[in-house]
Length: 348
Image (cartoon, rainbow, N blue to C red; front, side, top):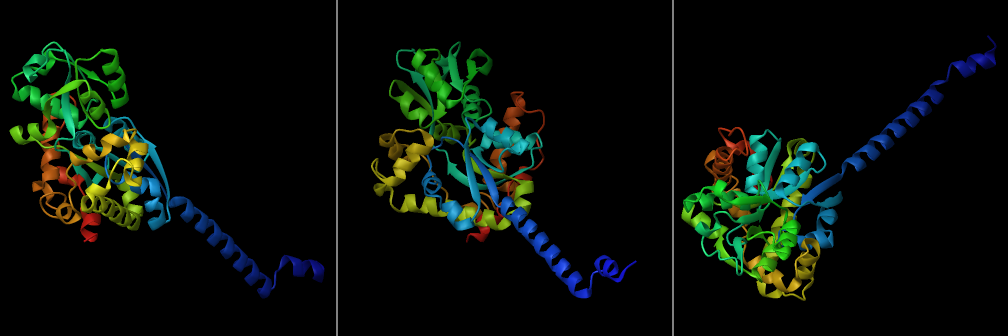
């Protein structure tokens, strides 16, 4: 072997160090690219009229976290749950009923923020001229609502409380846009839904009962929340902590200046844009909800109370009722396994 060939086959220490440095730089570049790619999240949202829609419009979450955030609008809580289960989204917003069903079916998620206490923001409305004035009048009539939603749960609770067998009512599985189309065609006699669809059907209908009234009468409350897949939560703790701060600031901005959220304000215009609601109806719609401050969410009454919390108890009661109706097959002994107050507690 010639000296020249030997020198090419056996790199000197200097050349080895250069090669090693280059390899290290390449590895760091690849790792940095993978990390940057991982700083992405897909959030599934619905058309609920809530303050944080303005933060979506302004890109506040992206600004505070540096993440690439993709928002995917879904038509129902059931769709949100399926998207979480499949990994199509990492965070999703839905009502207590879909999340109770999801946890009962073993979907690995954690509820981490109460979007709203529903109160009177969901209502059972009968069409004018339908002859429906009470829950008892719904026998043999058609009600459109999204299955496995908070309105589905409360419709069944209300019918049972009124002594009406749900099987005597034709309950149709329709998403809010489909409800509006069916309402306009005259295909349904009543609906149990939320804004913006609720505001539109009220224009030609009569409110028979609200979720707030049903909860007061039966003790079975409903709420909307945000949940995260457990696998995403394990890897993105800091992101979730900042997300909660964005949510808290959005609610605080609204509750501190409700009068400033007028139809012409940028906040209300953003809510209307993201939900499909009419700007003129947004301030009244927002007023129907109760937005729970972070300090209360972190405490024992809401997210921080373990099995005895309002959230865990509501999820358990909802799941038990859904099992009774044949919607889910089993009920967990403790629904606090699907509740994580860590990020809202740190927000204090």
